[in-house]
Image (cartoon, rainbow, N blue to C red):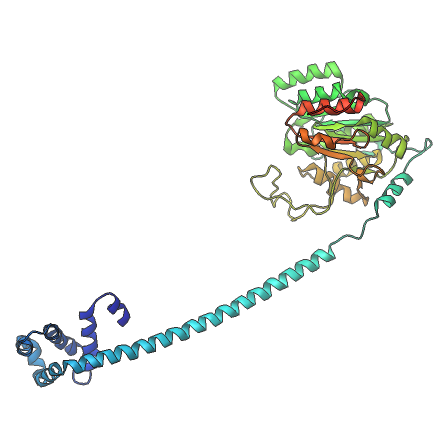
Length: 461
């Protein structure tokens, strides 16, 4: 309080408090001392200003305080003595300030040191807690690491051992194994039907493509390029009337559109993926391989044919789900800025199970049938189809994902083309398929088609 009054320039209040508390407490009460101090203050100011009539003024000032004098008439000699010894009072004040300041600073330093000690102790506790937490995280992560997977040669040998011969049956696709109402159900939809349902060609493998209703140009590019060398079907959901009219005309022209009764949207991709399985189960009993693709992927059919009919087996294989990338521990995106955002109510874990990057998936028909059975029986739905079908549901089959990179001599069978400069990554003798970025889409398609199917030199950018 003294320091505050001093800093604020309140010398009169300071002096009043000093005299009332330090000088007169033994003679007067605090109230009486404060009244006496009012007189002394004005007298002290005048004396401090070197007024020649200082002491006479003090007496006259004191005599004016008649009320105070009536109460404390005996105090006049004391006041006169105090004023005569004003220098002594000043020294007392200086001594008091010095002593009090030292005591205050010492107390402040003690409190500061105590606070610092507490802060240091708290920091040590925080570091200990953080260290224990990190150790637990590392321990949990270490314990959750799956056992070492076989190397590429062993994995490829396993794939070859699953190959079928001409006398083997690839899979069981009998409607007797499905419930009676299965044809009208799609996971948890009970009124499903195929709105457009072309016949399935009897071929070794099929390429079944996820496409949006308005992606006419992408479907046209596929039909006019590598789609002429393989059986291709485009899978689509319901759309608005204007798009539906164009789809009907497109279907009548090319007979390669498969449409189901559910709204075509990004959040309904799991329905579309399951519709692919349903169509194969009900319409394609003799197919040996099923290749699910997105419509922004360019396929090298020459390399695909070599992989399926020469490297593996033209009669098919078992227990196969092959993909370009297997995500082992992909974190769940929670940010609102991402179109792949998943809320905790949709998926509670922080990491997805191992699953495939879903742009290009190669299935054996027996795996198609088993996945379809689980999807229809469980009737659970999660909209991220890559995670749900190739991760959560596939884990129930106790099988292992395969990678296209296990194909000997094809360490990088998949390339991603963001720009024209990336086209040099495409090797028609090794690349199986390429993901196309939207920029320069047609140019990149033309580039790869000529390099792959027309045996010409690569185009210059």
